[in-house]
Length: 173
Image 1 (cartoon, helix red, strand yellow):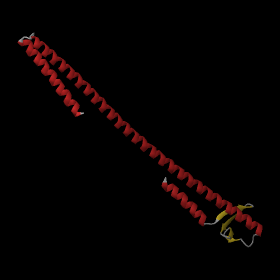
Image 2 (cartoon, one colour; image 1 turned 180 degrees about the vertical axis):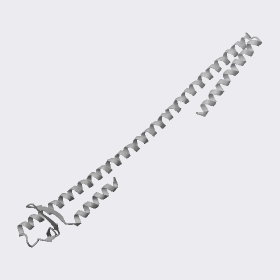
Image 3 (tube, one colour; image 1 turned 120 degrees about the vertical axis):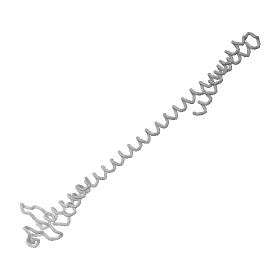
């Protein structure tokens, strides 16, 4: 693509350095600065002032049209490059937005996990406290046999282990 554009620019540049070809009254003339050529011979002095002026004006119009086309091409290329740059920037911003959303979601998940762990810890502590108070209440009244006391101590131990486990889990988060 770049090679095609440079080739076009080179060809346009070459056309400016060579004579402009102009057709007037079905005759082809080549205009080079202040010299008018026809079939390879200089006819500047052979033409009257009015014909020379018409030929010069046609050559100038043609050259201005070529310059206008070149300017339009440059503007088109510039607009295309700008559009590509904006598309690239938009893509970059979208990628950054996705990355930010992913990080936000990760933080939200971490907060939810921590809240769940805190809830589990509170529940485990409540159960352990309740079991401990019930054991102490029954023990004071003397209503526990040795087997029941062993069962209650085992139950309290399991609940305390559950509390310890919940605390460790919460510390990890």
